[in-house]
Image (cartoon, rainbow, N blue to C red; front, side, top):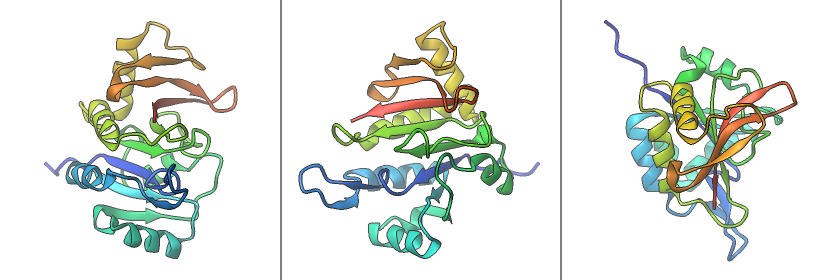
Length: 195
């Protein structure tokens, strides 16, 4: 029997891994994220997703000291939702075996599938503690299916699983979870971590 493929984390660059320091206003590596990224890379296949050009994306990963943790870079992706379903298929994975991590609900949710959950980091009022992200990823991946993990976490929080409502949850030390409506007809599974 062939080995099970590793679950995939699609990780955004600008605003997620590379953040603006609230104190200095300078851009740099998300403070405290390197050991968390290293830990996640031991159990998951990490893939960078960005709208940046390929050369700039590779240079940014190298400059941030994270290149060795990423199995691949998917650059030049359009805004308004990334083609995560297409990326998953090109890697031989189902959308449920992938999780998107980003900082913007519109850009960092899938535009082509409702089967791939996203974790959105809201760094606006302060930077999210990276260990909270690791806790959420591991919770959602528990049974090898991120969507099933999302649905189980949502069911523990509320009986109202209708679209458009985000519910407070203890997932990752405090978050909001629910089906976010992208355009009034497209629902996306989203966990929001606030800084």
